[in-house]
Image 1 (cartoon, rainbow, N blue to C red):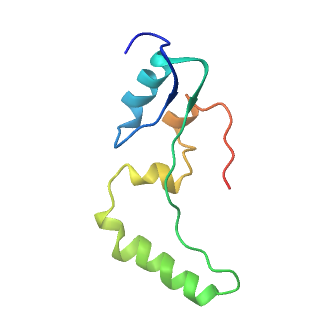
Image 2: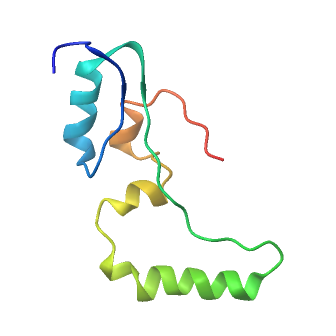
Length: 91
């Protein structure tokens, strides 16, 4: 794609250290980068259930997650993310 040629971009499966420079190159000034993922479940007032789910997520399923999953777990606040994202709101 041409330099500053798009208003909006959404990554599919991506490698952040190479994706962000390319997104910065193709996005127009004030363009939008949309990234989303799903977080772990948290059930209000159910500490025992939440502990079980966290243990299952980290210990049972953890070895099977892609290494890129860490960006979602960190809410895209890692070193390579911060170099692109100036401000981020996590809800």
